[in-house]
Length: 340
Image 1: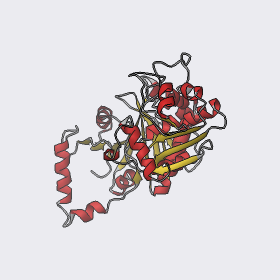
Image 2: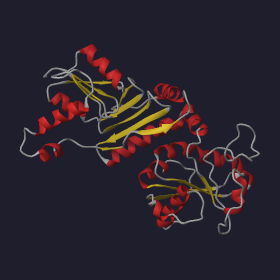
Image 3: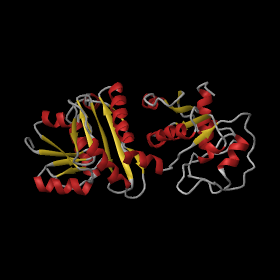
Image 4: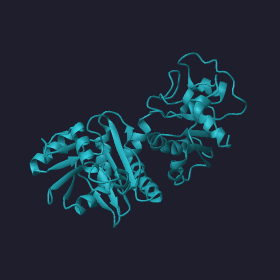
């Protein structure tokens, strides 16, 4: 329907609006949520709407609700009109992008964090800021999005660039804003989701004799590595509300290895840990083993001694008897990179 308003959600590609205009439609970006899209379509009499999640709503020749079978049939109808479907599909514009990234939070935290980010957003031209649903910033070569999920206590992040370099720049700029804000910092400090602080001490690792649920301090002394992902250990003497770094400080560690490889959420949560370590242990040497694609983000942090980029190894490489499987896999990744 030429001239019709075509609705899409804030997570959709920046490439979409120009394609809608080229086809004679009027693009309109709106809030994420299939019920919200459906209601808005009814309000403005839109013939077509869709979300990045895959909900496609046809009102033209259908009933205006999301129907996967019907959407598939319409796609088949389109590709049947050309002799080579591959040529048609491969001719669509592409970008470098992340999937939808979820950063887990405490209940009620995401809207407060997003509100603080919206107030703090001050991106110079040619950036264009949209606050219809969270914070979306569009540049000529891509966009970044941070919003609160409608259904679960997570921050939803998505980044896209016309080139790999643009994607990395946009991702770094948006995450820098998140980490600079007090609300974002508090989120990172309070959440201990999959936070693994690895502490290297002198001497080869030995089998731990710590009892089940024993203190992380005991494990530091016995095997030279501790997993603090669950927060202060049960036997910790840290004061109420104290930092998870209490155990690290208590043994006077000077060489610390942060191992955060495959999750953007891990990296976001862990960046403030570097500041905390320096505050607690001035002069500590901090190395970070990280997935290669995140190394440019860490390069902005002056508190790191060494950034070790590598790839996550398959779990089949995990050696037996060295503790938590994920921890071992990540150490194996660093070893494979020839850095440990």
